[in-house]
Length: 199
Image 1 (cartoon, helix red, strand yellow):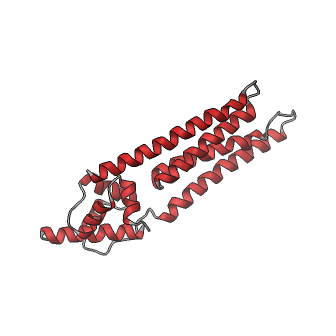
Image 2 (cartoon, rainbow, N blue to C red; image 1 turned 45 degrees about the horizontal axis):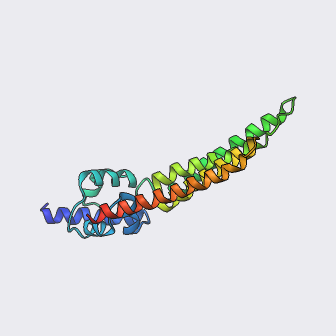
Image 3 (tube, one colour; image 1 turned 90 degrees about the vertical axis):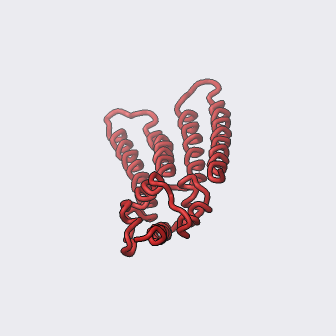
């Protein structure tokens, strides 16, 4: 196999796996912290990503490095977009199942446990933690901001509902400051990623 044939094979496979995953070149570029021009160049065969990027892509698609250089038709990746939705949904369902079981156990105790229904309020930030983890692993950066924002405000809700001291309402001010910091961090990282892609 000549150098040109090798590049064309890798380019064809990179494009095929991206399309099988239902991603645009821009979406893939954002996940890799590269520009969509770089992804386009790789898929045209005008250049090759380095080994680290190829390994990252292989892990992301659920394939091996050999699959990128194989002349055989690309196989369906193990890790599909459907899994990237179903696994977080199942994880969230587990959180709420556990919350329901804890509530049922507390309700069956011979003595009354005050505030046992707060179990469900505490399940909300746990849900947001789960979604934050999956958003970092698989989803777009804007969904990471949404998940982190949900986490900030639901933690504030838990504190507001459980801490009974004078001035607890100030927790909303703290949450607002943290929210602004999260938005600024998001835009800083987004801008930094764009700058790195163009340099």
